[in-house]
View 1 (cartoon, protein in one colour):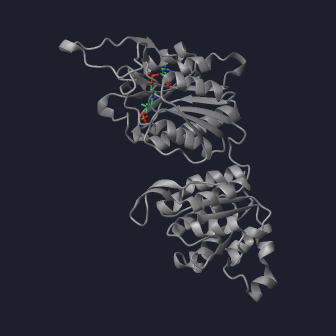
View 2 (cartoon, helix red, strand yellow; view 1 turned 180 degrees about the vertical axis):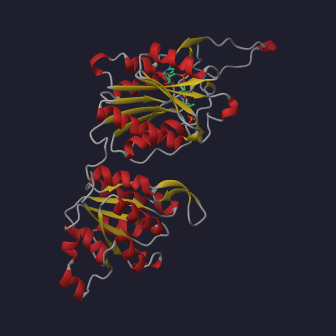
View 3 (cartoon, helix red, strand yellow; view 1 turned 30 degrees about the horizontal axis):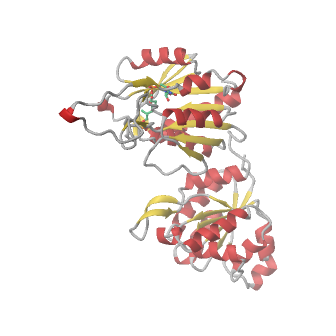
Length: 401
Ligand code: PMT
């Protein structure tokens, strides 16, 4: 665990600096010592007094301060930590890091450090997308600097796009992973999510209403607990979760291929709504309307079953295989039968009748069905279902439960 470790947090000048205050609190709650450098820009957004009060330590701001140099020079400051975190990391500080510029305490400490560095970029989306920023990031990543985020969404400037600093839980997960912490450290997880899309012709397809919210939340929760997660996602409108390797696919067959390629894994969670049928007579050209208005015949064939295939992998079978069951009536009975039929260890059963809003919504009411029985969970946010399931996976893999 990360308890007893030390982080040097560099807060540079962005509106997201306020999130860094929460980050300090969360790190302290975990028993991690946090020492902060506040840049001149950072001090425009949060006060040294607040940072000092939360971190319980002096806040460092000046490169040439006789007192600081006597107490602790910039070299010691950067070397005494186990990890250096720059949050928010502005386009400016990333550019300085890439160019090796050392013109203030933060950039000098970053140049002098021999410790791993994690950056959490935060900026306007045009600045993020600018070739200069992307080239600087490529340079930093090639040197081993790790990155978390940015996320997409509404920015402080009112524009919408990538550039929001990653949320605190995602930064904590990245820190855990760099500090070699988290109860799922060393565990490989495979998660499927979203719908599949089965072509009828190059422009038409069969699909379903899955948004990927539940599967993506599970991938993110497992990653936060330290697992190395591969998420295989059908077409969704969600951003790739932070700290997760995401593979984008369209059809059920592609999803199966990607799932097999992601083995070996310790745990597999199949939350995707894979289309049960694919179109066996899909046309290579766009189908034309028939003279007289006759509709073309669409022939369906069963798609391969990914969950069953993963459950039947013999020695390569993940230690824990978890499926979902999407039902509209006699949910638990159907789900129990599905668990037997598909050979998985657990089934998470959910009612997907339109009135429940499960498909596409933010909440879910599930039953966890295991060999031991059936456990009803209350209606909670999909993120909370994911968190709860991830901790059950910790218990099962680490505690033998
Ligand atoms: O994506 P959201 O909008 O957040 O909605 C979440 C969800 C409702 C999609 C999710 O909670 C869920 O129930 N996922 C499973 C949907 C489904 O296809 O259920 P099923 O009962 O048809 O399939 C049973 C299991 O077999 C599932 O684990 C499914 O991933 C798997 N399966 C099904 C068919 C197939 N060809 N391959 C599979 O792996």
